[in-house]
Picture 1: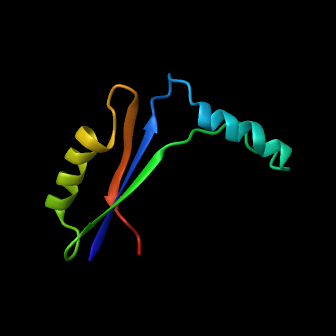
Picture 2: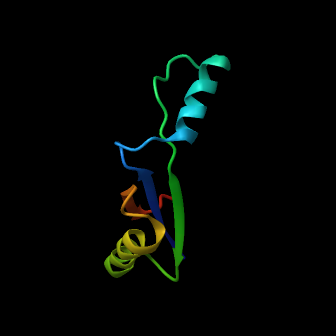
Length: 83
């Protein structure tokens, strides 16, 4: 079985309240080296057999039409998952 990873992030110009909350908590926990955080979504799609070009094309289409909201999110990655 093969796996495809799809990662979706909020568009850079939009507010990210979850990322902001995490960014505020990190220094309080001693993680001072990080300057900002953006929180997104990760999907793992499983296919029968090895991942091929048709699977990746279908995953890109699904990412653009179902897995993301193109008004407020960007699909930043569609790739075969590393095992």
